[in-house]
Each structure stands twice: as C-alpha cells, then as structure tokens.
Image (cartoon, rainbow, N blue to C red):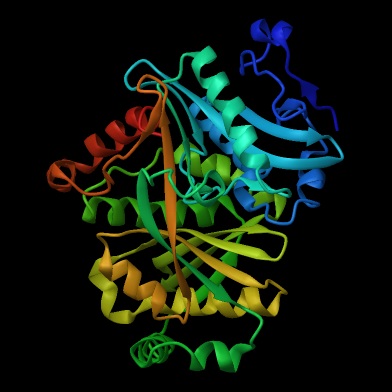
Length: 369
C-alpha cells in the first residue's frame, strides 16, 4: 500500500498541509480512494469499523464532494494510530475537518498508549495550516485524556449476536416479544435485498419518517451511492417489511468483518399497529446471527430521545456513552456544542411541503456535515 509521508513539499499537492513528525514517528497521509489495499490493511487493525473503510469514503466524496484526509502514525506495516477525516469546505458554514461526516461513531484507534495523542497534535497543526474552523472526532475522547471535555454526547447500544435465536429472543423485553408475535400474524413479509428498487422503497419510507420528525431527508443520490459503493459490494443490506406488496417499514445495515451496523430505519406511521418495525429488527437480528456476525451496533441516539433509546434497549443491547470531541482552531481549545437534532427547525420542516423540504435537504446537507 502506498502511503506518502508528509513534508513541506506536500503543502502544495496534498490536502493536509504541513505536518511535522511527532514523537519520532512519521505522520503519513493516506487517501483510501487511491490505495487499493486500504481495506486489506484495515483488516489487521483490530478495532476498525465499517466507517473506516473505503466504501464510506467513496459515498461521502461522490455525494458531497468531501476531501479525504486520513492520518496515520507509524509505518505502513505497523500502524500505531489512525485518524480518518474529511475536509468539509462550505461557503455557508466554513471549512473544517470531521471524523467522519454523517457517521454515528468513528472511534480513532491506537495500538500503543499515547500514540493517538501524538497523532491528534499533528492533526491540529494540519487544521491550522488548512484554515479549518475546527476539527471534530466522533469518538476517541478517552484517548485524549480525562481533561478533554465532550463537545456533544449520545447513547450507543450494542448487541451480542453469539447467543443463538432462543436466547436472543428471550433477552428482549416482554413488550417487544409481543410486538414481534403480533407482526408475524399481521400478514407481513420481510425481504433482504441489495437492489436499487429496495433502496427506492426504503427511501419512500424515509421521507415520511424524516418529515414526521421535522427533518429534511437526505438527497436520493446519497442512497444511490450507498447502493453503488456499499450494497453492490456485499457490505450491507436493505431489510423491508411489506404489507399487501407495499413497503411499510425498513432498515439499512452496513457490514464490516463480523460487525453489523444499523444505520437507517424508517416506517409508515399510519400502519404502526402492524408492528412492522419490530419484525424488521427481529428478522435482521436472526439473519445476521445465522450468517456469522458477532455483534450488532444500533448507532447513536440523542440524549433527548428516550423513545428511541427504549426501543434499542428493549432488544437486550448493552448501553454506553458516545462522546464527540471538537477542537476550535480559532479559540485554540476544546469546546462544547449543542446537539442540534431538535430545535425550532423541526417545527418548520413538519409544515413545509414535502417537495420544498426535499429541495432544502438536497442543498443543505453538504453544509451541515
């Protein structure tokens, strides 16, 4: 795998700017889109997730035009620390580095104590050289020391899939088991698919769900790129529950090794009594367990969303906190920010015509990454 060490000459040809060596080890820049062996190298890094791979980098670049800026500390065959970032260059919200945009959690990892702190110092130098407003890590706070404040926090939930169907079902809450049994008797069918038609079916549900929550839906090209770079490469699946042939609930899952990630979920609220959401999740849990996956990550949940938190806990998942960290280059320090999942904008998007909300989402998502 080609990995170029950064020096002053790279200031004019690489998106990173000047990054001096830190702690005696070279700081290197890797563009996963230009390194065919990137995913193979990640496979040797124990804690790597789906989001660290090249497929997600391609989705972000092709949809929003973000520039990959992935930092490595160590030698090509012995990575000591990894910090994948995307440069977001927006005329509306400024230039910054995010690890990674539209990612629930992207823990940056180290194989030696203190290696990530050294790498982060190099990233700070890069951020200032590139004129970033800030750099944000969606995870990894523990690697920076206890004095670094969380900029924003979320709930995370993970389910062990190694226990077998009977135990997986028995550990769910009784209300969840009743909902699954009701859904099984409601005439629903469940399908697993990699097709673009399945993506379209899910996207129709997503638009309804986002409007219900007072949020614009992502542009469809985002999901087209997920289909192109993730689903067709057998790195994920769409699960749809149908009633009378029409989609009524669905979810999108991503795969990396033996790990599966629940990334998106959506449903038709008018048919909520069918409990299709519960059936989609249960069938997905069974399918992934039977196909050798070891764990299911439910993604992030806002601290102010108790309903979604209860849904994820009801499957017997283990709960943890996910802390983001933001370094403000102008203030030269770590800062806290508000979780903007809820606010005045929710009321606005609930009443906007769907077509206008869709247009706004298509235009704005790049700027709010």
